[in-house]
Length: 256
Image (cartoon, rainbow, N blue to C red; front, side, top):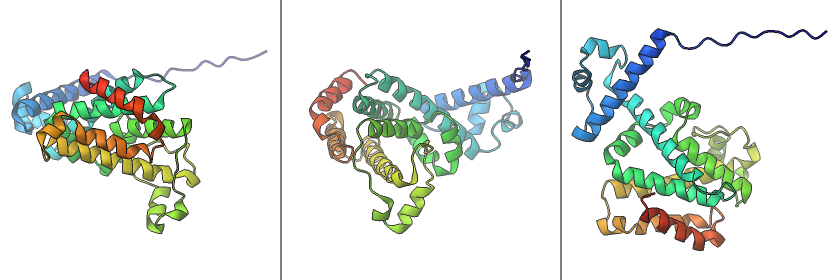
């Protein structure tokens, strides 16, 4: 006779934990509103906005630095959801289009949310890598999209012994928001491709967001398009460029 063992379901969050999470969500929402409307976030302003005393707020955000980090990670998670929706709108069998759609959506969000972009990308760094890899983040999403592209249509990946020994050692255990469980040591050069691609996307968008180039170049997306063109060869997308150019124009015209 087979004995069926009953399993006890894991206990859900307590009422106190739910209340704490709800209050923390309110704090993050208030901080984001203040950031957009006033361009800054302070503990005092948030406490006033929520009708809380400063000591009560300190139970959830002991310091301004921790508050900003919490808000930045929450924003980054929202952006990850946005680029996921954008990529999912493209065919599953077309990883190139999915990556391009996510890239365009990331740029569109940054240009229309300059204050939030500045907060996130000056406070979300490798010091919080564990938090970024444990949940949805833009870094995790872009690495997933790039790895999927490589799996579908492998492009050249540098062997570790072709790289500087110091860099090769870093790539064996990199601080990067990515799931590397399926990336064996001999393919860790793929992480270097990821890092370089991200630096070009982030650098381009940062210049656009902070208006460090002619605004007409930003309005017509010349630098952004050139960045994509420059990445076509290293990512094995040269043959796909004609249709990807069309897709970029369509996505830019419709706002993402």
